[in-house]
Amino acid sequence: MSKRWTLPWLTLIICATFVSDAIGSYQTGFQLLSQCEAADYSVCLGYIEGIVDITSAARQKGSPMRSPCIPVGAPVQLRLIVIQHLRREAKLLHFEASLLVYDALMAAFPCSEGG
Image 1 (cartoon, helix red, strand yellow):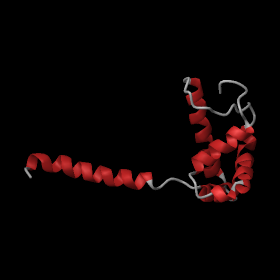
Image 2 (spheres, one colour):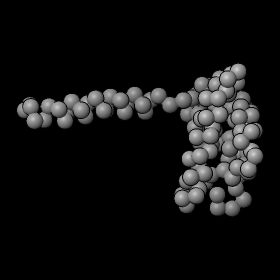
Image 3 (cartoon, one colour):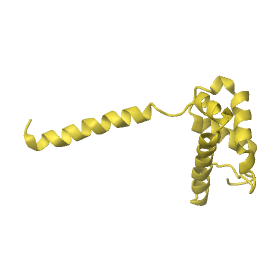
């Protein structure tokens, strides 16, 4: 292999390694429940708020993705709603936490139309 192609191939291999690690390293429901029940549950709140932000942005941009319609003032109870959902759906805790949070929010705050 010529020197001209060595650096691009090496870069591709290194990037592929990081991507494959990232794909398999999502947070599970087990991990999120543990964080939400911890004395310092700030990581849990940040995770939930991230899901809320992305679904809200998708709705505002006209995405066809259904998203929850969370009322003003509800963020105080989001952690409790997610904990309740994770406990109720314990058989699903090995799934990605983002999907479980989304399901919890959709169940608690469904939009009446078009959300």
